[in-house]
Length: 160
Image (cartoon, rainbow, N blue to C red; front, side, top):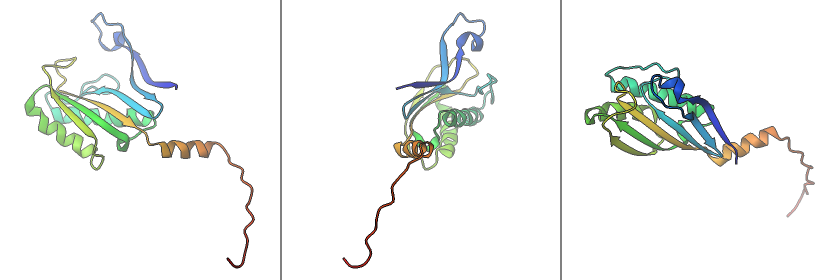
């Protein structure tokens, strides 16, 4: 099985001033499974949105998740599990309200964790997502790529 690594980067470029040198990526597609790096108030270009606003940070995280899932050939409807981290119990309701809006009708399993802090002090929340792309669309996509030649069947007419 080939793993597709989406938006590769090195931590030196993201966490300037820190002696961290890890090769990572934003998402990995392994077969029909998609694993997305935790998304926060930081957009895909490194700008932080919604300082002191957990709902605005969650909106940004969900926009980034949508983009990353689509780049992996997935969508929110394929999400099976989410893990939500908040740095203060008081942020939980605002964060979950935004997540609920984006995942309406999806019904993933969810784990919520209150943490002391995240990678940067201005980050108030983070969301990890795991998705599984259904087999049917993959088979349909493969069938669309490979032309199928079929012989016509003879059909008997008349009685039983």
